[in-house]
Image (cartoon, rainbow, N blue to C red; front, side):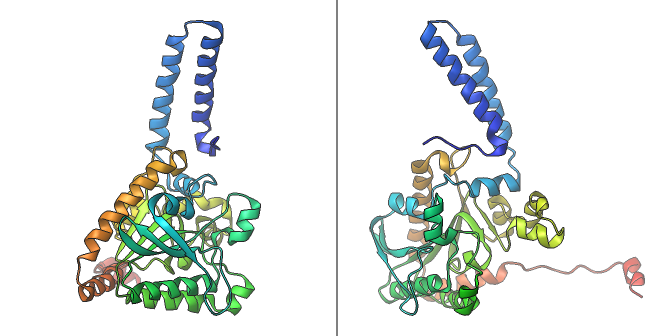
Amino acid sequence: MQLQPLDFEKPLFELERRLQDLKDHSDEHDVDLDSAVKAVEGKLRETRRQIYGNLTAWQRVQIARHVQRPFALDYIGRCFTNWIELHGDRRFAEDKAMPSGLAMLGTQRCVVIAHQKGRNTKENVMRNFGCAHPEGYRKALRLMRLGEKFGMPVISLIDTPGAFPGIGSEERHISEAIAVNLREMMRLRVPVIAAVIGEGGSGGALGIGVADHVLILENAYYSVISPEACSAILWRDRRHAAEAAEALKLTAQDLLNLGVVDEIVPEPEGGAHRDYDSVAGNLSTALRRNLQHISRIPTDELLTKRYEKFRRIGIFTEGKTTAASDRSLV
């Protein structure tokens, strides 16, 4: 698979092309170009270090949206076995943006809920660009209750720009469907683990994200609003998306510091799309380790900790106002 470079990665791809040209020329003409090859390799290593060691929030958003990034079904095929997809919410329809079903994680049977995007126009139309309808969230809740009934933990893989905001979605009460999921997930009597594998946009992500342990991939993001939408609201212009991304504190590192997520899953240098098997192995290890730990916690204690975990998010304290500021209010 030939990688498609992002704008900020183009210097790297130019160096890689030069390096390959030098090696090809050396082989074809039997010319000793070792010194030139070593110089380019050194420049390539230094450029990689500078670019990937200092990624901005907006650059991480671009990596999270990379069309070649592994999607949920790629992880399901690598992290789980005996995947059986279940369909329909038993009320309206099947939502292909949210494939869900049963699978084995090691020796543990689990319910797996996921968002799925497409890689081309045909797939994206079928998957609705990863934006689920109300029936997707109701299907997810149906399967979560099935998991609770048979003592199967729930694992959700989050990768969506947000829930679908179209007229049909609103007519079928998308807000109510997400709100019910938030309430019901908070009191599911089985372990719940969520992993943000790409985009974690707004209530569409949170609708399957209430969990005992929240993982996030190194270059994924999780936010109440997309940077472009935030820019359009604050600056009346979507061109300030990079500034909005910095202000939203949506990167994995910021979210861990704020207590919104519990653990960062490392990716290969340059992003998950560079090595599917490596990042899937890291995610599988994190899921198994945390599921093993959470499964030992008594159910009532687990529910209490889950409730307290989400109640702590967003807590702030108010400082005392100074005398000067008090006078300015008079």
